[in-house]
Length: 301
Image 1 (cartoon, rainbow, N blue to C red):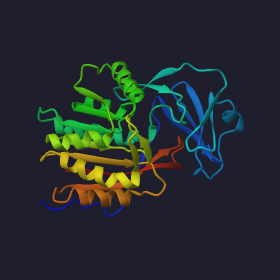
Image 2: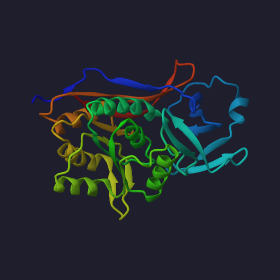
Image 3: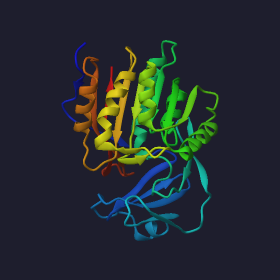
Image 4: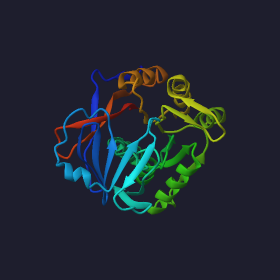
């Protein structure tokens, strides 16, 4: 079979607001968002422009994250202490919002653009009556896993954090998807994939959404630029002969969609199909400004 065709131009996949999320305003290194009933201010250095809403709107936010010198670290400051968790939804999937110690709220809203694409891919694969097998690596709190399970996939969800997997299981219960074929695995992604390759396991779709840096449950160290090529190559070995997709997403300043596309093209040589690549972005409510959040490349056929 021919090598995958890489799209000639990049794509910006814009996530617009929905009932439980909106990017209300941004500027001067910050963004103002709405998560269900709460308005939240978080740092965003790339917002070099001027905010549009009155300062009073920003000052009345329910929660503000004050960063420290350590990357992604800091502390939350609240007007009135909100509940520990509260329900949010995207489509048919329900999940909890949480004020985590690392500035995010237990999910990444820009990924909604990927969720919609994954939903379509799984439904198309399941339309013939079969149940596609999907692997979600670095699955975190499981929103993507639940989107695919709701669409008809049998999902293997892998994350090195016991707490994150516990949250993911809670989200499955909240969504009414606890009875779906989802395997919840607390393990280092590299270790799990290597074992699956030895077993001869196969999957019809794979999501690979690694951090820039991380540690496994037994102290394993993950470094994106050093470890991603080998892991991507092993993931390619796990794809079934009739596999439908592989999605690669990365949050790192020195990466690009073009680089991720080149990696996928090499690892998937001979499988045909196409590779789309570009950037995930959050779009403000007015629709004329967007914040680039991460880079992606995705193979499908």
